[in-house]
Length: 179
Image (tube, rainbow, N blue to C red; front, side, top):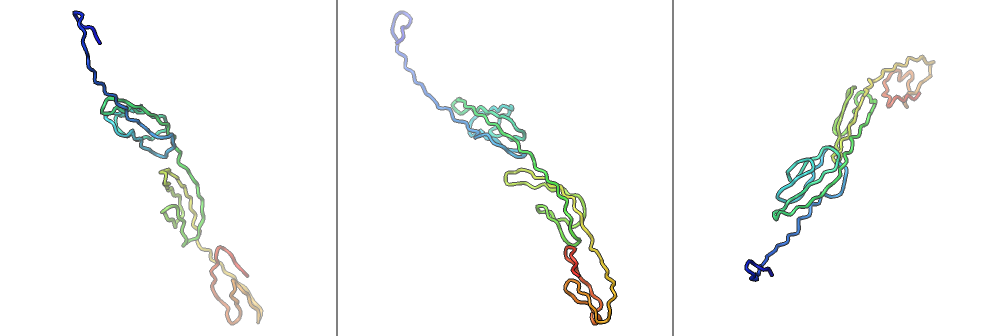
């Protein structure tokens, strides 16, 4: 009860509405590759620690980010998160192949000597950079000039050469010669 002017009592009726502020949850701290998006959820206005005013922000650098969200009732809720950026991995390859063969990195297929750079992306959107310095070896031609006595023979890679079979050609796999 209130005492009004002139000593008269007056009765005031009060209607009070209490609103529970909406909870903002940016989630647990985590690591990302390249870029990640932070989402503050639904609200009317947003104020991020980087001065952004949208519901979502795209993050490309590690750090701690906070947002204050105001809902339709004017209530505010704040949350923060720390994110770490994972570095891209780098791999150096120095393969040697034979002419006619190929070397594959991801979806790239190489058949000629040279230096190549491929960027592979994992399911977590992390870059893996592969530097390849490829050498392609030309086939080697080898001649065997041998003199045999009558009735003699020489066997190369399982083929016997003699007076009735004096010449031939053999393909050597991986540089192995069997005499």
